[in-house]
Length: 316
Image: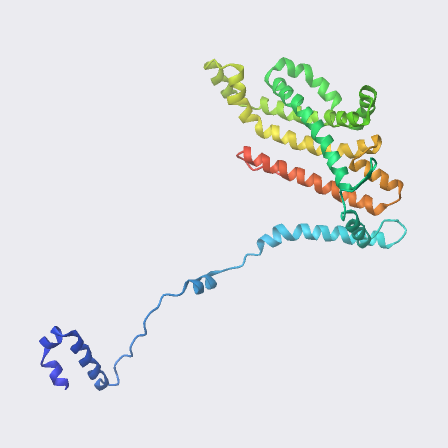
């Protein structure tokens, strides 16, 4: 049978099926020293490849998530130790948490003009901050551009800014009460006067740091002041302007609490003072956390806004 295979090569070539059948018949008669058949090579599955090459990177947890959690844990531990003595009168974290659940169960209740939930008080404070800050931006940003653009105005207003900027914002509150004859306009006036300085100073500094080559090109092209402002100054000054806006909003949110404590009415500052009169220290601590969280959200929003208009990374 083997000789038939070797003596009929043409038949094997003309009929592949016969050749393969004959090879199968020859295979059992091969000597035992023949190499074993190589198993077919199959491509590794995609799932197995991903599983083999997947590596878990915990650096994000160690560098970003864990430090803030440890900081909060440290604050709670110190708070619990101080409150545990019983002599300070400060409620424990668990007592404050129980009070917070009660406060935020209905944050927008209204019983009377001076008895409203914490939500209405925060919104009223934000409204005063928005009005005062908006007026300060309308006045401070154009003033900063003019002071930075013209040397005469810079020399004229720099002494006044240096004199008035260090004054405490609350020192302006009696002037507001005297002029506007009302607590709410006086609080807005205080926000206005404390928010205007960072925007004037940062805007003026940004204008003064515009490269002189840009201004020389504008002079050669005989550009108008409006063209210089829209095409050269505003794009170059925008990072400085946004920094001044961030500083102004932070200062305004700090000042409104103290102003509302003195003027009364509806607001987070008045809510803190009213809770102090009721000796409800847990609510005061809750208000402190609310003020911090709102300020943090304002800061985060302004940082995101700044990153949309600047090419460089905005620092926290």
